[in-house]
Image (cartoon, rainbow, N blue to C red; front, top):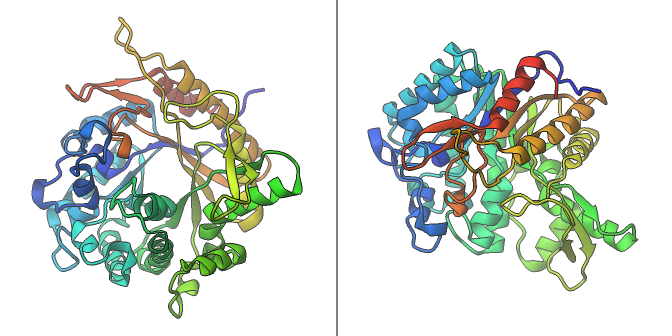
Amino acid sequence: MDHVFPEGFLLGAATAAYQIEGAPDEDGKGTSIWDTFAHTPGKIRNGETGDVACDHYHRWRKDIALMRELGLRTYRFSVSWPRIFPEDVGRVNQAGIDFYSRLVDGLLEAGIIPALTLFHWDLPQALQDRGGWASRETIDAFVRYADLLSRALADRVPIWITHNEPSVVATDGHAVGEHAPGLTDPALAVQVAHNLLVSHGLAVAEIRSNGAQKVGLTINVWPQAPATESPEDVAAAERQYAAEAGWFLDPLYGKGYPSEIMATYERKGWAPVIADGDMEAIAARTDFLGLNYYSRSVVRDAPDEEPWHASGVDEEGEYTDIGWFVYPAGIYDLLTRVHADYAPPELYITENGAAFTDVMTSDGQIHDERRTAYLQGHFAAAARAIAEGVPLRGYYVWSLMDNFEWAEGYSKRFGLIHVDFDTQIRTIKDSGRYVQSVIREGKI
């Protein structure tokens, strides 16, 4: 049978500011931590930066025309925080607000619903210099930023996301060092994770009071499957899930931090400093939860592996170019579990997609069968969850176009639209045409 998304379902695509905009110092923009990190030798594959990326800052009108051609019902983008506050919270750069105001107006004129992410990792360097997300000063700065931007745009932007993947900001940026700001301090990472959640909760009321229709947060979640049905492997998978997903989801829904994970942090001296009122702030009512899903992990018990006594197991099957196992059923598993555990009023898949090597054929086209099949499988699994009562209201493919893929530079392509980074010529791939047909026909 044909799987069908319900009437009114929002199917679109997503991007992030640093990955597509370019124009790193134009019209008063300040420096972000990703500007700094990408220009640090040895941090990015092939020494590449986001200085030009997709040149979206200058080509946004043409990019909206492509979105309209694809029939996208919604577009998720992020705002570059240092375009709004170039140095700190004291001086507002009106040119930055004007850019996003024009972008929003252009989307609305094209019949595309804007979904705005306030923080997709490009913290102003000036705030990092004063402690970054480890400092409560940054919490206050984020709330002021959220208030200012929502006062400017909430009359036209209905969907607001405070943060994208706070776990990646904390872990990859502050414990592993593979992302900006490139730090390797696990205790600092735990404090950063807490402060990000507090800043989210405090910003929700400001955004809502300025007229936003829906306010939420995006979490990336990898379902954790036990390698065997042994009690030890099952427990290891649950520990890993609690550490990666529960640490963020439980407090958002008033359950506090998972006790076993907190006990481990306390034992290792990594527990965060929690101020009075923090947990109540984190649990602020939200209108939806955004979930980013790319793959799952299979986990076995590993007593010698710190800190969760768990270890990943490779699966046989297809992997994307970035090394992620292709597992469409995982999106169903994720949606149904989060719905059962937390009952968010609405859910959105705010990112899902695949990096595969693309080849332009002699006819000037990209016949990306693997990406198309990937999306078809994941769409079908999501539709199955909807049919079983999960309140999934929308789905954003990652990504609209090939872009700067963080530490991987330009080596990994996720886009529905191919970008020639030398000429900036855009070409809609077969996967883009597939999404176009799903939107037009409603059938997967």
